[in-house]
Image (cartoon, rainbow, N blue to C red; front, side):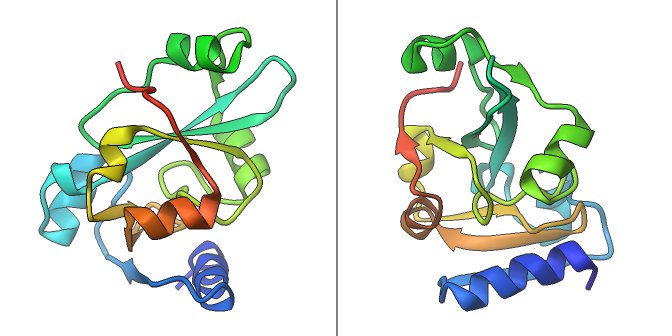
Length: 154
């Protein structure tokens, strides 16, 4: 287990989150790779799109693994300029986790959750590294990140 996976596992335990942390030999960087590694369907996953607003603040847009985020909708909903996608360096700096392993909670950001995510009972999300995942209920995920549910998918 690497430092990022350990940090997330400690966060889960410290906050008594009902979640399971999984580590794989295979890459889980993309939804397709993660589904293959975990022997699951891409429909079981969420992805965390890291965005930066005009004031350099981090926004995490959480959508189903098969959906795409609309930065135009996010800008309109939040009444800000359209946010841009964070660089891998910004992702590591602002979340404390590498690109491809960013979890849906455990760091400071503005979390936005698409309603389709909340329709799912249990989801797979990033586990802190490109080779790990977390299984968590959508309700627990929202409680952990205090996310706002808004339609943000394309």
